[in-house]
Image (cartoon, rainbow, N blue to C red; front, side, top):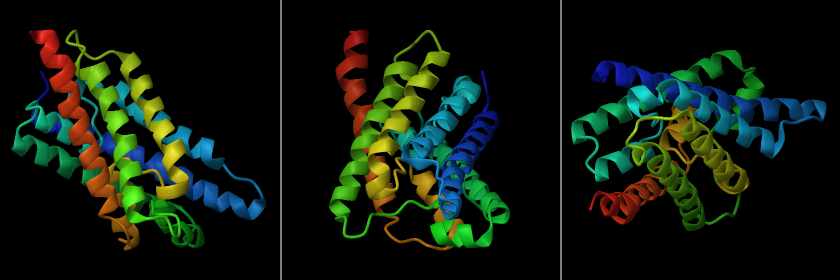
Length: 231
């Protein structure tokens, strides 16, 4: 049984990797445009999904492999985490996100960093705020649903196939949402680069949308499937 310090360290490291490789891929894509070559939407989506899958494989058995306040709120609403532990998870995730963004800021060329605000997600020009919030909420809903279906529902313990399933669902969400919202699906993914770059525009969308989606996913899966299985 892992203690809280070990769990929080795992959440810090996992979130750090997700933001470093996810936001880093956005920075690389922007940097390569000058040479006429880019990673493209698929490359950015896969970078996010692969990073998440790798970190869940590494730390899923330690902390549950959240790396996302939206996943953690799903555990909280279903009473799988106390309020204090939830706040501690969030703190570890946000600190990991900021640390990763600051490291990227130190590494990435200045013109690339400033040109893309460190990979910070933002709404497409003229894209309605309500639509951005709905898109972030919906994509996050299905990702958190996969967490409950593959990790929480598997009472036999964490299995590596869960990491692949969740990572690919995250990549699918980024694939659809990125052109319109930047495809955060995770408050920490938006918070880290925003804190490092000092650009907070539309930040509320990346909290309300994903947290709402994660909250509903946990509540619905727990109520409809897990409680029924226990009966």
